[in-house]
Image (cartoon, rainbow, N blue to C red; front, side, top):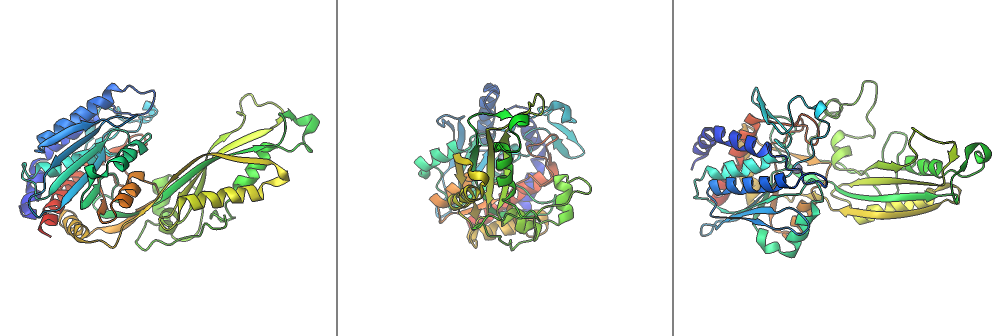
Length: 446
Ligand SMILES: [Zn+2]
């Protein structure tokens, strides 16, 4: 098929594609504890049917220990052709407060070419991208195809990682597409070539055998909460840059957004300034970031007049692709121990680490996807980074150093993923599907 024929076929298939996405997004497949499990299984079965209907000869659900099944599909490679792995996930974030939604989260609603609903972007748009791109070939695929659609990415996603690490042959491929990201703006194509890693830990400070009266002892008794706050604020300098020794700042070679654009997307309030220095891309894609994500302290409501004996915080570190998560964890915990005031007792627990990712220079697959996106969008893609982590990507790049890993998708930066009023722009979805189908065809030709 020529790129023009593929484009026309994707266009002609859009009514079916949208219907498929609406059907999948209507299923509240929230794989978090406390949410019903039946809809998660229902979404797996729905995904399985979609892949069969797309012409894949082998489709099955794979049980994942301690998790929901992954849906796996496969079509053998024509002689001499490479194999492509296509990844997405069918589970979604919880909807949160329904009052914040303008349309019901699990009743996908179309308004002026935009489809609203939980999961319409993250990541059911990824599932549908693969289904619709594959359907274009009517069962005669130009490359070998493997599809893996995960059922528990948003909560405890490392289960699929463990499964793949135990049986990597299942997903071995020459190129791997992770359709769980998106473009900075609608119609502005991008490949995500850099992901930050992460580390997290809990820090506990103890000062007294138990809390004591703040009138009787305050002023002399060491307050665990005050000590912890001093330690936490010492991790950033006056400008808001991380100032922990060892955590050096990086630079991002591609173009990121401006400060104004970041202010708008992040919803920064008038008069409140951004933190840190350097370009926005340097700060959110190529440098360390430290965030206190939780504090165990007495609630304001019902607070009593006491000097606290113990205080705890959860701390998350985002790690640039050039850095190492375990080293950063060591650097930050060493720093906190060293600057802890008044000889307080400090302990650390509940460590988590995950590696980042930086794409290689790019080979045949990268060339084909650049070409395919240029055709589908009318301009070649630019490189962008992502501040968050996709632990599976780090695993795949470690297990298959020869494979080219490509990250793209229809979750543009304004898709409100993980937030109320999540949405996908249907024209953007069509372009991403077109790009993927052209990619598969051009990659086969070399
Ligand atoms: Zn996702």
